[in-house]
Amino acid sequence: MKLLILSLIVSLVVFADDIKSLPNQAGNGDIDLAGTALLDSKEIEQVVGAPMEPGYVVVRIKVSPRTLNAIRISADDFTLVSRKDGEKSPALVPSQIAGPADFVLKQGKARSSGGRMHGISIGGFGTGTAVDPGTVDISQGDTKKAPDSPLLKILESKMLPDKETKEPVEGLLYFLLDGKNKVKDLGLLYKGPAGRLAMDFK
Image 1 (cartoon, one colour):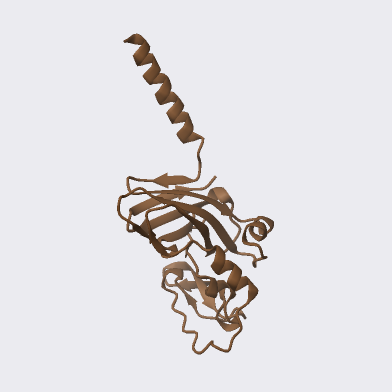
Image 2: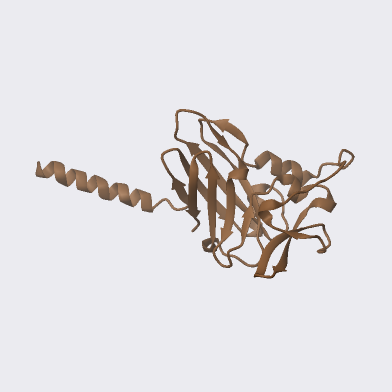
């Protein structure tokens, strides 16, 4: 009996060590998340396969459903948060990053009566209207004649797929944050069909 108890204790200690040795994860009974945040421009270029402008954060994410039924996975479920200043960015679609020049998102700031408010300006000349990143509404009009950029196709091919699945899926998420952040300053929020989760980056 003593040997059995000792064996169980050792197993629990080993299991606890395994959990501690796996950073950048979050999960519940329905879904598991594992991700890595990339801020360095060279790392981003290596992972994406093309350079991106400063300010973008790329998260390499793996989503593993744990339910018997398929779960809808979408980039819309994710928000990146900076603990440094509280700024938030929803996941961007590739066309917001490398679409027609007049509609590429640029980071901007605005002031409200309650103080500083972070937002995103629409337009390539720094004179766009600052809006809440969570409520960006872009009307691109007729863009059928606009050629697709090489970066757009690359971002689309590597983005986290939007699908219902029982199997693990992997891909990239794209965000835009103002200011200088470190990986340890960032957190990823998930709010979707599998509930709510928060993941820290190290």
